[in-house]
Length: 256
Image 1 (cartoon, rainbow, N blue to C red):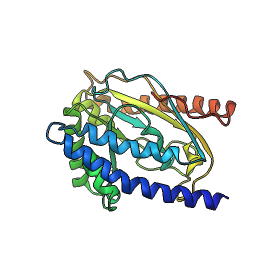
Image 2 (cartoon, rainbow, N blue to C red):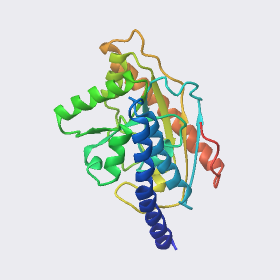
Image 3 (cartoon, helix red, strand yellow):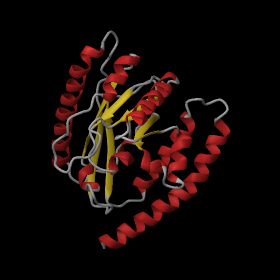
């Protein structure tokens, strides 16, 4: 049964991507002349991830936490990283973010084309020049009143413990005076384990935490900002994990 479900979900995802390419392309063509931040095209692209969740009978995702009243106020959004399923979960949030992602994903036909239309940002983590270009691209998106989404761990850990956070997201926030918006994720590790493309049953949730202002901070404050953010995510994640254990089998809730 699990093999049949996985075959169905992957087939449906491929169809969503192919049909979605037409949808995202139309939105991009219509809005590109006046939407410099590619906000509309990005939202259209995120809708495909939401659709991918709906067709998966194994996944029950929900979001919660602090409401973002102004979707065009830019944030540097940072979250812990548990699996590929994080992308599907965080895409349910109701405002647009440009994702910092491995450049290899941008080379995938159709998917990579849509990521470029959406204004997402490629990075080769082993290349210093690529990292600098990605940083400048993040600055560009923020200047156009669009948030950026970064996993500061850099990769997913195989165990349950969060990896150390890298400084990049916090340097970006301090240098631009942009608030940090922490997001805690729990439950997606069960949805798709590291090194596997097989779907499994999972209840998962992400919670938007209170923003952390960076006005007045300098480069000397980056380490403290990084550590404070990481600790808040650790504590919130532990609470979410306890909540999921208390309420197994919960259904999709209204998103933030």
